[in-house]
Length: 302
Image (cartoon, rainbow, N blue to C red; front, side, top):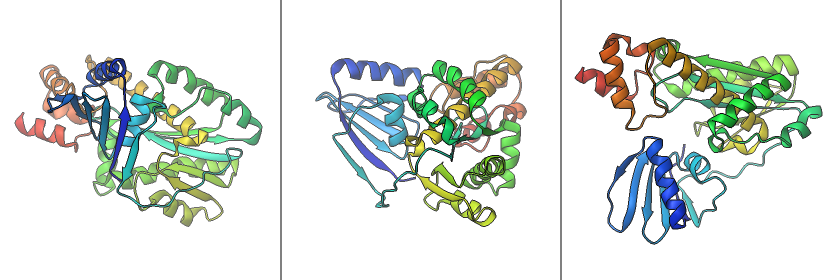
């Protein structure tokens, strides 16, 4: 994933709302000369200057933009990658796949895929389905059952114990694991529906899902691009994946009698301390992705 810089112009009220949202999401705040605040988390550094300019830098800038600023237009955008633009295919008779939980310390890794038959294209386009990062969790919990009732779909949910095992089996490489999960979901849908177009949210510049599917399903055309949630089939997949991730987080909280925070920001360390107090360091693999650096540092100290 390429690193980028995005610049926005915000009103004072919007800056205040943004700070509150980032604080709730567990971002780490720092002071910065001439700035109202600087927040770090989710793969970005967001600097809110007194002039009203917001500068967002990092590999997660695009996803961050969608989640916290919605349709807010950038003043400028510089990307280190010079990859050519891709035209997205038509929605009718296509598949889309996306993942959730990849950057969250606690909880599952989920990959979902959705098929959009031509007869249902209009229904999906008329719905409120969009990239899950731009939707509230309450709306996601409403949309996901509707999607699963009306559209063919597949899900792969790896709760932490299974995630940790499969990450090791994948050579301790998250991208290899994600490739297999996208492959499994799309292969299953292909066998069910037989469509010949799949759109995948790209998580590696090498487009590994395209290569993996090209060998097994040469009749399937794969379009693997960044920000693929612009394609509504991928947006639908992002919604059902996020819903499954949230369900797993609820299950973990009920099982271990602890509220686990989302993301990997500042609330995670106190949650790990509470977990160890209630249970033990040896149980961390039951609730967390133990190869994450913050988990490794915590376990080393405990």
